[in-house]
Length: 383
Ligand SMILES: [Zn+2]
Image 1 (cartoon, rainbow, N blue to C red):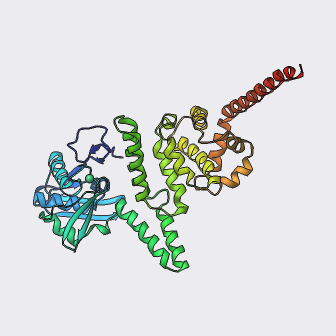
Image 2 (cartoon, rainbow, N blue to C red):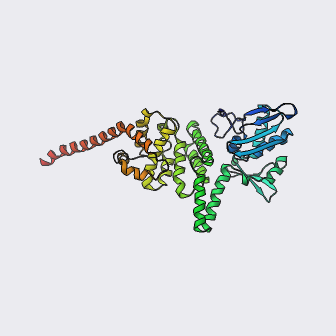
Image 3 (tube, protein in one colour):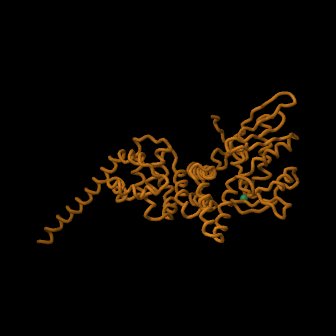
């Protein structure tokens, strides 16, 4: 597998904590003589990071180099983007940055958040998702006529994805019941765990959060607001909220989950409270287990992780005891959640024993303490 090196958007920004990243172009020179060409192996991934159609940067490069391009999309893992001629890294990078400046960067806040739109079928303009600024994009470049003929609505980015979701919602309100159900099913399939859409969303969230965690200069509130916006953009059906919570959860914690607990408290509770209250702790529990598994966190840390979540009241004592002691009852509840896996659940239940024992011993101590207090008071009353 090719290791992905990330660079900033655009690549000349030097801040290593910068939130917006794209894969560094990977080039492969193919053929010889007149038939020599440059295969940009990961242009599809780059375009995803730029939230635009693959063909926009590809055509742009073609126009700038005065070369023919060819594009083949078989599936998400099999996309070919080729420019005739042999080009070097710095040539491609420089032109790609120019494309970004013209069509992706907001002229006001300089974030790569321009939503490309077309008015009257003639003018390409953008609206910034970060600051709301609206301005025309480069309509004089030769790429502009290509964009007008191939407008951004048909692309496969996150942006068009969320639009699709909204369209489904709107139509659903007017359509008949059968239609609605059919559409809901399509939607649910789209937002399956393997979904490319969700994965990109997750990456975006993670970027937001790594920026929050790493770059202390940025206020927590602002980062929270940004994340909330991100999620709102992804306007999901109610029954898919647990998936969104899953994404939020998985993106908030890095390799050491206990680190991010305090910082993420408000956001996490906000989103989990949005779920059915009965199910939110259940979902939280399943997320913790899944996080352990997914991040390959060593089993020996499970109690520490669990205690962290307990200390911050993400999961209450009663709930933990229910999970630990009433396995069958809990299973009925958890079974409905897409994250439930019995084997995994049992594995971590066994590992949690020291933590549960500790918790039970704490409860005992508290009771004893109150009893002693009560006993101590009694003689005084008798006197
Ligand atoms: Zn802006």
